[in-house]
Length: 406
Image: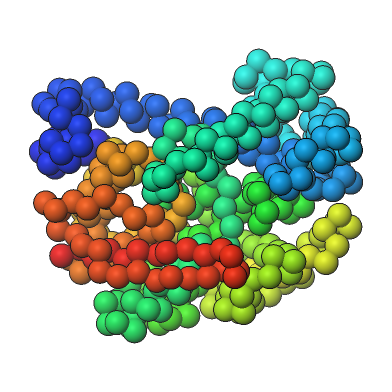
């Protein structure tokens, strides 16, 4: 990888960070900022530990704890019991990959996972997260609300539904033609660890977006008909990149990749979202029996699909910091780039730099989809050309903004 050239980012720096004027200053800042951004992954891992404490079901029979019930859970002893159960599980993690990861994380932080200090550490991080959530809720600029938060990998299927809806709208407008997409990219696909209310931990960790994007492109007829399509997966997380490499190794030996797709009917997804959930994987795999949810998740709907090895092999992981770096040879390479729930973790300056790097990736006429509205770059050959408003439930939804390379 290489940092973006100063000549390319100079207009952005002149507008948003004049103190970085000069090639030497830019390169020094870029190296320092790259390290700072990557260091935020560890903070995101600690946030995932908090998610597991509150919502995990693989280590406890205690009910999950939604944020709004935190006070009651503390008073009733549920939080204390969950903390105790998590500490016990960390002492004997067996083959549970999430617990093994957290055990190593605690050791790296100098915390003994075999002692009560592990529970104290988890509760301290819970208190930190709650304070941060109160702070974030007060911020007016929602487009970069998490610019100083740890970068979390937790993900869900719903943004993928939003991307498919946007792609359908774009196709209807004639902005992407049948068979046009031969190379696509996903930025920051995430890893299903356990999320606030949509992720679970009773099945192995999995990544969704690259495979879901391939499936949507196939369903909509947008994939190139001849030759093998390519989906490049850009990320800075060693966990995500390693996961993708491992599933590709298994795919090279003709082993498919099973996606577990749970859905909580109590969340009252709208019919279109439910239909997407039912169809996900239909163009890229075959249904298989899902892992049975534990009793604690009684009523959870679940399905699973085995993705074909050829689809997995089409997804190539690349370590790249989209804010600062460019992949040699990627200029003008992609017909489509997708990034959801990524840019809220960056400041306006970082978002502008990232958008400039996306512009460099796209072919003329190529499309970029994001659920974060990014700063306008008058000097860059890219324009916002539309958006898709998508609803997941009556109370929750997304705006998928369309950008096109001129």
